[in-house]
Amino acid sequence: MLVVGASLVVATSFACYCSWSYLRTPARKKPISVNYHFTRRCNYECGFCFHTAKTSYILPKEDAKRGIKLLAEAGMRKINFAGGEPFLYPSFLGELVRYCKEDLHLESISIVTNGSLVKERWLEAYAKYLDIVAVSCDSFDESTNMLIGRGKGTHLEKFVNLSQLCRKHNVKFKVNTVVCRYNFNEDMNAGIERVAPFRWKCFQVLVVPGENDSSTTLRNAQRFVISNDEYQSFCDRHNHQKSLVPESNAVMKSSYLILDEYMCFLNKGVKGPTKSILEVGVPAVMDDVYWDDESFTKRGGEYDWQKEEKKTGSALDF
Image 1 (cartoon, rainbow, N blue to C red):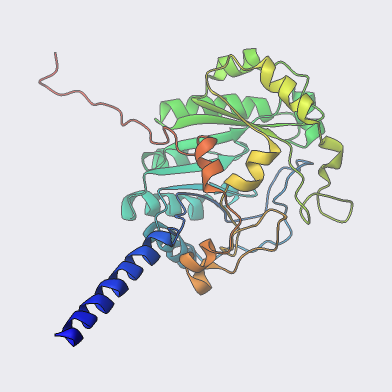
Image 2 (cartoon, rainbow, N blue to C red):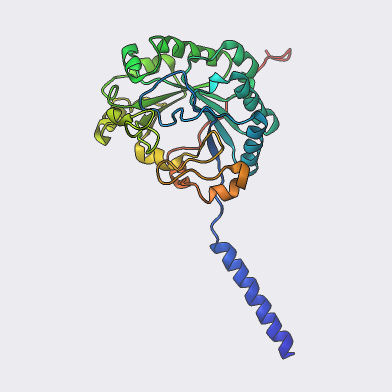
């Protein structure tokens, strides 16, 4: 009887310990939203770029799909394709967009582009799989864009045209602006109201060690740097815009999951990149990446990132 009683006590204690250990073990972070910079190549030369063309490598399509599937299985709900300029590879990009929506059923697919290479025939083929196109626009003064490195004088024309194409093809239109030394005094209100994005991200120009921090890197963003007060003055000038989403350096450094062309997560100057998810899997990499999921939530990392499907009429409609 004593033996049975002692065994019961031991078993109960072990069960309680296991339950307590489970409660004390933090839940593994899920890669809810991932920015996949599958190429570093670009047709623009923006002076502050922090993902520069140090290599021309691009993964084979099937490897890219395998990595994206691993991310989806680990909890990714949104993927954002970026570069470089992703539309340098329109067929590769289109197939990945289709795969993510049609095969993996991800909630949201988005692309960040400078807008210079997007063709309507591409949207005719792939817009149905795409939720958001985010286009970079740092100024509504073309001379400022050229000073920054955004094109040779036709950036705004292509930017406005793409905003119209997105509406035509039922893709949500978003604007990304990098606030820097050359535009922080600009009033962009009239231009933003004209193109009417559903979301306007305004980033404080960011210097990333090893990418754009000195004369030894392909880009040197030091001449673009502004103070926190200068950045805030730009935000204050535009704070009545409902679409405005300001993001300072502090927010940007910690709240984004950035996957490079080898499918390694970047640690944004804190330490070197992680190993590739293709080699060690997503869980191991998530334990090593510098990502503040609380900051991700606080900055509104989850938002209305799915487009509304166009309603089609029927014979029963009145």
